[in-house]
Image (cartoon, rainbow, N blue to C red; front, side):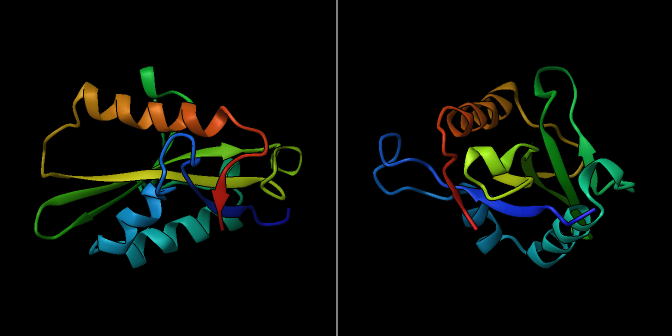
Amino acid sequence: PAPWRVDFFQRHVEDDANQAVPGRDFLERCPVAPRMAAVLKAVAEAPPNAFAGGGYWEAMHGKMAGYFEVRVDRRDRRHYRLFCVLERDGANLGTGGPSIVVLTGMEKPFRTTFTDRDYARVRQLGDEYRSRVPRSVLR
């Protein structure tokens, strides 16, 4: 199968006058960005439904069902996460084909969890992304 695209959600001007790109903004300041980019590339080439995650690409559960995360840890005992959705019907939704869409990223100390509020923010961005056709993405 052909590789999937990797796109970044870009907030719509009606929701954010600056049209922020939260996932890209996170990667620009993330110390493990090259490793995260390598995971995204590998998943896109597999494609996602055939990728054996090895702990680096995981489907989320519960309230986060339908979201996926790239998981990279650093030796300084920090966890870095990129939150993504899969756009299987991207050709009809404005992404040009099947896409992994990076919504945002977060980091946390070793052996801690994100709060319900943190996850709610990810879901809010996911809802905002899915609310428009064509989808608002930056390649």
